[in-house]
Length: 382
Image (cartoon, rainbow, N blue to C red; front, side, top):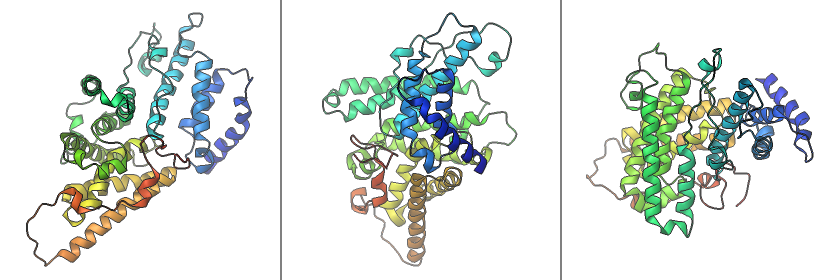
């Protein structure tokens, strides 16, 4: 680990001059920038410049026209260019969600670029086929932008049509996903289901299923933790129930992810954003409901705390430590209240959420997903 940090620190220092204006950029420059934004250790020395490297990565892949097929190249070279473009496209979406922005690489500029072929076909000496690409996450981010816009959010018909299209595309993705995994694999999202060991499902399938359910949390939720906490109309709506159901599914899948990838090494940097978004509901409910929190809420908080602790060990980032501390505090307070309540009799009564708590932990105010704020980029001021 120490050698890896040293290597990337040196790479960061020596590669920086290649980002200056007037440089004759080549494919390897784009590949190096991709490494710095994805697989480099998530230490503060590199995270402090992450926004810079993300901007440069988007700039250089567009400058090299990686979104266009060069018919003068052989198929292997075209495949390498496609792979790096689509990998950057995906990172651009992850970063937009992480830092409360909009995607910089548009669907329109790469609408005619085929997706790269699968590894099995790549390694096989035969002509390479074309494939299609769908990106419902881009649509969700645009939907959220429209919903927050003071003009566009008045057109409810437009927003409803957009959401219906997103849900339909997510279902198409899920149908395709189910055909690629073992039967009953998707049942790991159920609370009591236990997947037998020894299956052939790759790690990416577990992460993909978690992200699928998180897409519904993003679509039906409020994304911003403060909005979630104070929006009583949303808390009483069907959207809240839908977001909560998929958040439960995320927690269940996260439990299985810990089993097959205990060090969270497969997608350790950007997966944290999806994980936090799927955790907000449980943290809020645990804080608001106190000792009235049911066992499912506390169970999911405990699972998410385990995953967050693994993230802290793997990446050592401030926001992960912050949310781990908040979850741990909420759990300990609930357990303490439950212990104190033993032997006392309470009248059966259901309190509305607005009566159960009005205090929001100030640490949660550092990370906002509303206009003018920068998500996990808490260093920046709105």
